[in-house]
Amino acid sequence: MEWFVTALHTFLTLLVSLGVLFSRTRIQHVSILIVLLVLLFGIRHNKGCFLTPCEHKTDKPTLSQLGQAFYLREGTVEDAVFEEILVANLTFLHLLRIASHSVLPLNDIF
View 1 (cartoon, rainbow, N blue to C red):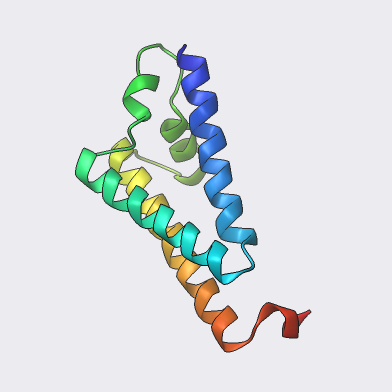
View 2 (tube, rainbow, N blue to C red; view 1 turned 30 degrees about the vertical axis):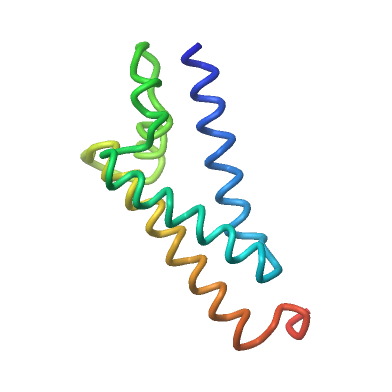
């Protein structure tokens, strides 16, 4: 069961990341922004992602621990802090993309 939760967590993470990187229309921008803000406030309110406690039931590393091993050189931070930083960075990147698409639409660039 824990492997299913990790796979679901990975799928949702990839889905949100790809949405941030490849959204093109205003409706997509707004819907991704709403999802990111709900995730950001949910992580802050619940002190972590709601799927992370389900992953701690076995000895395998969680998705947050794998992300920390990939992104951080030394030391560790709490899973909740790492998840919050990651979602905040995605939100900032998405807001930059929305602002850049407002100034110069994507169809004019390519």
